[in-house]
Image: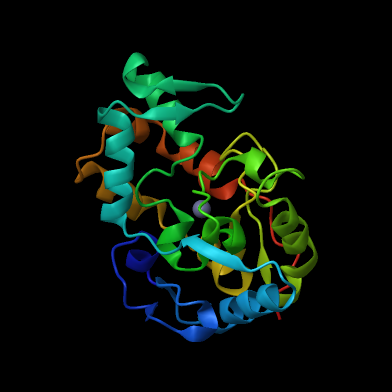
Length: 235
Ligand SMILES: [Zn+2]
């Protein structure tokens, strides 16, 4: 992938899926090489009676800026790592940046920019009217995605997907719903363009960017590189 693609600035590596019956009519954008493995994963989940629904896929840099600034400037409820919630406007700027970072990437650093990463949920729960919040409790044994959680554990590797946020390593909090296509995402992380990221943030309207730029390398180490690595060995 090019540096622009890695930062969410260029969509030329993506395919748009529309009304494809094999994908449950799901509409989303993804990396062209991730499409077939993802389709196979979804098909297998359907066959096994635990249909998975992609609730979030590709996101551009601008979309991530909108998510970030909404949490930074508006009365947004932020989830903290200990399960508590707080209104973002009650926090000092430095604390606000740190709280947002638990679950939201700095624009330019989201793995969702790559088109290789997807947030998934149990489609049958959604079909019954459940609205996914993407909380750890939803993926516990009694939660709406308890079965999906176990199914993913057993089936992801076979399709060369893995979960980069399966354990809390002090960076991004645990996200059992987030899956990643290793053959493209693993080299993408190795090529991550920090210098270009710095330039991009400097030239963008991002809440709290002075704090981000003051320790950008450390933040990239902590929130981009610190993941549970794929056990899939590249060919
Ligand atoms: Zn995600």
